[in-house]
Amino acid sequence: MDPSEPHPPVPPNLESLWVCVEARVAKAPNETQRARLREAEAILRRDLLTQDHATHLVLGMLGPNNAGKSAVFNGLVGQNLSPSRATGGATRQLLGACSQPDAIDRRRFQVRLVSPGPQGVTEVLSPGPPESLPVVAVPHVQAPFLLIDAPDFDSVMEGHAQAARDLLWVTDLAVLVVTRHSYQNLAVVEFLRDWLRAGHPYVLVYNEAASAATASAHAEVLQQSFGQPAEAVFGAPWDEEVASGRAPLLPRLLEAGHWREETLGAWLWQQLQPAAIQARAREASLATVHQRLSDWYRDFQSRESLRGKLHGVATQELEAFAHEIARSAMPMGPILDAFRRVLDQRPGVWRQGYRKGLRWAGEGVQRLSRKLAGSLRPVPKSAPEQVREAEWQALEPKLAPTMERLQQRLLSAGAAQDELWSKLLQSDLAPSRLPAIREQLQRDLETSPESWQEFSTYCEGLVEAEMADRNNEWLLQIMVDLAHLLPATVAAVIVVQTGGLMTDVAVGSMGALSSMATERLSKFLGTQTAQAARVKWAQMRGEPWRQWLWQALLPESGAAWAPPDSSQWAPIATWLDQNSAQAGSHGIRESS
Image (cartoon, rainbow, N blue to C red; front, side, top):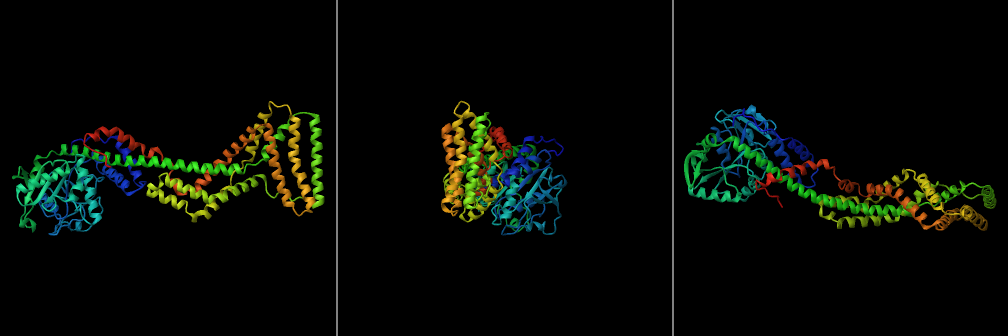
C-alpha cells in the first residue's frame, strides 16, 4: 500500500452515526448495552473515521499468556524491543514499531516516540492507557506496516486485557499466536470468534510445535472453531535457544503438514497485499459496528416498548386520582353566580323591583342575626382558598394507598423486569418519602394558578345555552334568589336558637345549602349543565394535579420514562436499515 495512494472518503453518515453513538454511551441502562455502544463508538472513531487518512496497515500481535507474542514481534522487527519473560505476561501495554512513526494517525493512537534501552522498551512492563502507543522507529519494518505488540487478552489484570481488546478495534490484520497448550483454550475462541465472524483477516502462528503435522492438525481445529480460515498458517518448533532469548523466533509457513522455507516476515513484506487487506478490514469493521448496534437497538426497542407501557400505566393511575381530587372539590358558587348574572342581564322593570325587595329582605335577615348573636363570623378564606382546602382534604387520606397501589401496578406491568427502573420506582414510592411528598404537594397547591374566573365564565356560557329555549325565567329568578337568601336565613335561625354558641355550624350551613340549591337549579335546567360543569372543572384542575402528582410521586422514574428525543437514536436506526444488506453479506448474525 503506497502511503501516497488516495483512500476512499469517509461517508458523511458515519460522522453523524459516531456523534449519535458517542452520546448514547453514557445513557446506556446497563453494562451490556454500554459495552456494545462503547465498542461501536471506538471502531467508528479510531478505525472507520480515520481510514481516509490511514497511512499504515496495523498488524496486531494477539494471543493468550506465554504464547510468544513478544518473541514473534521482536523477530519481525529484527531486535529485542518488547521485553519477555519465561513465565509470560511481561508486556502490560501496547508497543509499536514502524519505519514512519510520524505518519501514524493520531486519532487512532496516542503516539509517543520512544527509544529502546539494553533491555528493550522497559516502560511497557508497567500498565498504561489502552489508547496509548509507545512507538519505536525501525527502518527494517517495511512501509506501510505498523506492528503492535499487546498484553495477554486472558490476563487476570483487567487493564491488560482491555488493551488487547481495544487493539482489535484498529487492527487490519491480526497475528494470532498460540501454542500446543492454548490452541484449544476456550478464552482464545471466545475472544476472537465474534470479531472474526465479521470477516476480519488474520494470520495464525502455532508456536512451540511438537511437529509440523501436529501443528497443522491443531491449527485446523482452531480455524474450524473460529468459523473462518486464516490468511496463512505459520509455525515454529520448540527451540531452547529461542525460549532463552538467544535466538529470534522466525515462524515458517505451514502447508499440508509440512514446514516451508518462507518466514512470516518474508510473507508479510513480499506476499501480502496491504490495500486489499485494509479494504477487507474496513468492510469487516463496518459489519462489526452493524452487529453491535443491531444488538443494542433490539434491546433499545424492547425497552422503549416497556417504557411506553409503564408511562401509560402511571399516567392512567395519576390522571384518575387527579380527576377524583378535582371533582370532589368542585365549587358550586360559580354555577349559582352564573345563573344570577344571566338572569340579571334580562331587561324588565318588574324584575328590578323584585330584586330590590329581595335584597332588602336579605339585608334584614343579616341585621337580625348580627343583633341577636353579635355578628356572624365572616368566612375567613376566599372562595379559591376554600377550593384548595377541599382538594387537600380529598387528597390527604388517599395519598398513601394510592402510592402503594401505583407501585404494585407498575411492578406487575413490567418495571420489575428492569433492574434500574425497579430501583427507581421503589425509591420514589418508598413510605419514608411520604412526608416529603406531602410537603411538595402542599407547596404546589398553595402556588397554583387561579382557576375561579375561567370556570365562572364557562358556567355562564352553559347557563346561557340552557336557557335559550326556556320561558320560565321568573321561576328561575325566584329559585336563584332563594338559593342566596335561604342560607343566610337558616344561619340566622341557628344563631338565635343557640344564643350564638353554634355560629360555626351556621356558617357551614350556608355553604351546604348553597350547594343543595345549586343542584336543584341544575336539575331544573337539565342534568347536562351540572355534568358539563363537573367535566370542565375536572379538566381544569385535574391537569395541574396530574402534573403535581407526577413530579411528587415519581421524580426519578418519571424522568427515566420520559419519551426520548428521536434525534438521539434515529440516526442509528436509519444507518442500520441502510446497511442491513451489506452486514448480511459478511455473515453477521444478531446476538441473542
